[in-house]
Length: 157
Image (cartoon, rainbow, N blue to C red; front, side):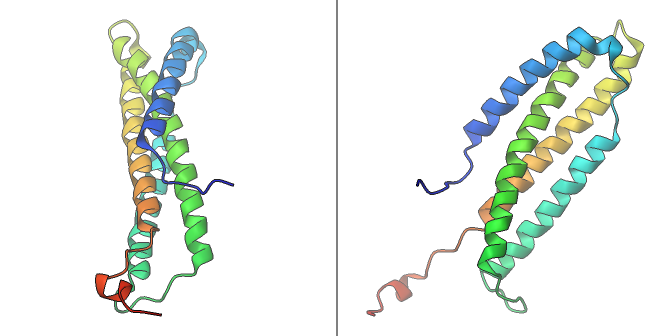
Protein backbone atom coordinates (compact mmCIF):
# COMPACT_ATOMS: atom_id res chain seq x y z
CA UNK A 1 0.00 0.00 0.00
CA UNK A 2 1.30 3.43 -0.97
CA UNK A 3 1.69 5.99 1.85
CA UNK A 4 -0.43 9.11 1.72
CA UNK A 5 1.52 12.12 0.54
CA UNK A 6 0.87 15.82 0.92
CA UNK A 7 -1.95 17.37 -1.06
CA UNK A 8 -0.73 18.64 -4.41
CA UNK A 9 -1.71 22.15 -5.43
CA UNK A 10 -1.97 21.13 -9.08
CA UNK A 11 -4.60 18.51 -8.21
CA UNK A 12 -6.64 21.13 -6.38
CA UNK A 13 -6.21 23.61 -9.24
CA UNK A 14 -7.30 21.04 -11.82
CA UNK A 15 -10.34 20.17 -9.71
CA UNK A 16 -11.27 23.84 -9.41
CA UNK A 17 -10.85 24.50 -13.13
CA UNK A 18 -12.92 21.49 -14.21
CA UNK A 19 -15.62 22.29 -11.67
CA UNK A 20 -15.73 25.93 -12.74
CA UNK A 21 -16.27 25.00 -16.37
CA UNK A 22 -19.05 22.59 -15.43
CA UNK A 23 -20.59 25.16 -13.09
CA UNK A 24 -20.48 27.91 -15.72
CA UNK A 25 -22.25 25.67 -18.24
CA UNK A 26 -24.92 24.64 -15.73
CA UNK A 27 -25.52 28.16 -14.45
CA UNK A 28 -25.72 29.51 -18.00
CA UNK A 29 -28.25 26.83 -18.94
CA UNK A 30 -30.45 27.05 -15.84
CA UNK A 31 -29.91 30.52 -14.35
CA UNK A 32 -33.52 31.56 -14.81
CA UNK A 33 -34.73 28.50 -12.89
CA UNK A 34 -32.31 28.84 -9.97
CA UNK A 35 -33.23 30.58 -6.71
CA UNK A 36 -31.13 33.54 -5.58
CA UNK A 37 -27.69 32.46 -4.48
CA UNK A 38 -27.52 32.30 -0.66
CA UNK A 39 -24.86 34.38 1.07
CA UNK A 40 -25.13 32.11 4.13
CA UNK A 41 -23.24 29.35 2.36
CA UNK A 42 -20.24 31.65 2.03
CA UNK A 43 -20.46 32.46 5.73
CA UNK A 44 -20.53 28.75 6.60
CA UNK A 45 -17.50 28.06 4.41
CA UNK A 46 -15.64 30.98 6.00
CA UNK A 47 -16.47 29.72 9.50
CA UNK A 48 -15.06 26.31 8.62
CA UNK A 49 -11.92 27.98 7.28
CA UNK A 50 -11.49 29.94 10.52
CA UNK A 51 -11.95 26.77 12.59
CA UNK A 52 -9.37 24.91 10.55
CA UNK A 53 -6.97 27.83 10.79
CA UNK A 54 -7.33 27.82 14.58
CA UNK A 55 -6.79 24.06 14.63
CA UNK A 56 -3.67 24.48 12.49
CA UNK A 57 -2.20 27.05 14.85
CA UNK A 58 -2.95 25.03 17.98
CA UNK A 59 -1.76 21.76 16.48
CA UNK A 60 1.51 23.27 15.32
CA UNK A 61 2.17 24.66 18.79
CA UNK A 62 1.44 21.29 20.39
CA UNK A 63 3.52 19.28 17.90
CA UNK A 64 6.53 21.55 18.37
CA UNK A 65 5.96 21.28 22.14
CA UNK A 66 5.85 24.96 22.86
CA UNK A 67 5.89 25.78 26.58
CA UNK A 68 2.46 25.61 28.17
CA UNK A 69 1.02 23.13 25.65
CA UNK A 70 0.23 19.48 26.12
CA UNK A 71 1.56 16.85 23.71
CA UNK A 72 -0.89 15.94 20.99
CA UNK A 73 -2.26 12.42 20.53
CA UNK A 74 -1.01 10.93 17.22
CA UNK A 75 -4.51 9.65 16.41
CA UNK A 76 -5.85 13.21 16.69
CA UNK A 77 -3.17 14.37 14.27
CA UNK A 78 -4.12 11.61 11.82
CA UNK A 79 -7.75 12.70 12.00
CA UNK A 80 -6.78 16.33 11.47
CA UNK A 81 -4.77 15.36 8.39
CA UNK A 82 -7.79 13.49 7.02
CA UNK A 83 -9.96 16.53 7.71
CA UNK A 84 -7.43 18.82 6.03
CA UNK A 85 -7.15 16.68 2.91
CA UNK A 86 -10.93 16.37 2.60
CA UNK A 87 -11.47 20.08 3.23
CA UNK A 88 -8.88 21.05 0.63
CA UNK A 89 -10.64 18.93 -1.99
CA UNK A 90 -14.11 20.15 -1.02
CA UNK A 91 -12.81 23.72 -0.99
CA UNK A 92 -11.44 23.26 -4.53
CA UNK A 93 -14.80 21.91 -5.72
CA UNK A 94 -16.64 24.79 -4.06
CA UNK A 95 -14.14 27.25 -5.49
CA UNK A 96 -14.81 25.93 -8.96
CA UNK A 97 -18.57 26.06 -8.44
CA UNK A 98 -18.46 29.62 -7.18
CA UNK A 99 -16.05 30.68 -9.94
CA UNK A 100 -18.40 29.34 -12.60
CA UNK A 101 -21.35 31.11 -11.03
CA UNK A 102 -19.33 34.30 -10.66
CA UNK A 103 -18.17 34.18 -14.26
CA UNK A 104 -21.71 33.89 -15.59
CA UNK A 105 -23.35 36.39 -13.24
CA UNK A 106 -20.58 38.97 -13.63
CA UNK A 107 -20.93 38.89 -17.40
CA UNK A 108 -24.75 38.95 -17.21
CA UNK A 109 -25.01 41.99 -14.91
CA UNK A 110 -25.91 44.33 -17.77
CA UNK A 111 -28.86 42.30 -18.99
CA UNK A 112 -30.17 40.58 -15.83
CA UNK A 113 -31.18 42.46 -12.69
CA UNK A 114 -30.65 39.49 -10.34
CA UNK A 115 -27.19 38.82 -11.72
CA UNK A 116 -25.76 41.91 -10.02
CA UNK A 117 -26.61 40.62 -6.53
CA UNK A 118 -25.63 37.06 -7.44
CA UNK A 119 -22.25 38.25 -8.73
CA UNK A 120 -21.51 39.75 -5.30
CA UNK A 121 -22.67 36.60 -3.50
CA UNK A 122 -20.68 34.31 -5.78
CA UNK A 123 -17.64 36.56 -5.38
CA UNK A 124 -17.92 36.12 -1.61
CA UNK A 125 -18.20 32.38 -2.21
CA UNK A 126 -14.99 32.44 -4.20
CA UNK A 127 -13.18 34.25 -1.37
CA UNK A 128 -14.58 31.92 1.31
CA UNK A 129 -13.61 28.85 -0.73
CA UNK A 130 -10.07 30.18 -1.21
CA UNK A 131 -9.86 30.70 2.55
CA UNK A 132 -11.00 27.12 3.13
CA UNK A 133 -8.40 25.69 0.76
CA UNK A 134 -5.66 27.81 2.34
CA UNK A 135 -6.68 26.87 5.89
CA UNK A 136 -6.87 23.19 4.96
CA UNK A 137 -3.39 23.26 3.42
CA UNK A 138 -2.08 25.09 6.48
CA UNK A 139 -3.67 22.49 8.77
CA UNK A 140 -2.12 19.68 6.77
CA UNK A 141 1.27 21.39 6.91
CA UNK A 142 0.89 21.98 10.65
CA UNK A 143 0.42 18.27 11.29
CA UNK A 144 3.89 17.40 10.01
CA UNK A 145 6.46 16.32 12.52
CA UNK A 146 9.30 18.83 12.77
CA UNK A 147 12.75 17.57 11.79
CA UNK A 148 15.01 16.45 14.56
CA UNK A 149 17.77 18.85 15.57
CA UNK A 150 21.08 17.96 13.98
CA UNK A 151 22.74 17.16 17.32
CA UNK A 152 20.15 14.46 18.12
CA UNK A 153 20.72 12.61 14.84
CA UNK A 154 24.39 11.92 15.60
CA UNK A 155 23.80 10.31 19.01
CA UNK A 156 24.61 6.56 18.77
CA UNK A 157 21.89 4.22 20.01
